[in-house]
Image 1 (cartoon, rainbow, N blue to C red):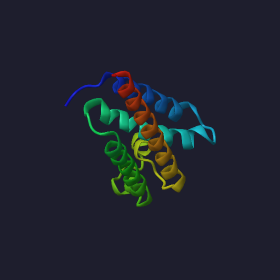
Image 2 (image 1 turned 180 degrees about the horizontal axis):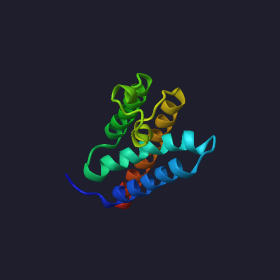
Image 3 (image 1 turned 30 degrees about the vertical axis):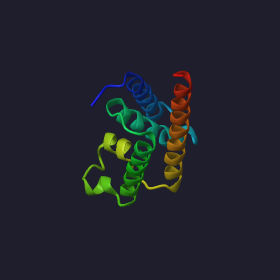
Image 4 (image 1 turned 90 degrees about the vertical axis):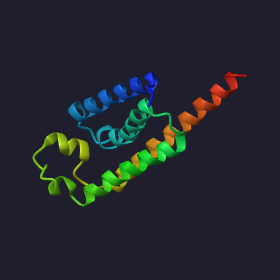
Length: 128
């Protein structure tokens, strides 16, 4: 295990952004879609903070994790766990399934892959 400062800084910034969205934005676009788009990027950065794993497998694993959490919402995991009255659990795990959320997760991971591949290919050109 290693520590990658740049991913850590990005993860912290994304986490703060997610908190600000959850607490202060009550609109019809950024809160429902932007938060879901950013959360997979946040999780990806958290994983990459500690692990030097390949881009595509890591991105796919994060996306599958997000899909599993969303599917668990369909099966009302919050109620099963007895956490209906925990605001924090409801915010973190979510309470309702949405195909739109799945689309937002997918788009977020596509952005991660594009940025990461672009970033790594540029660094290859700079090393010559």
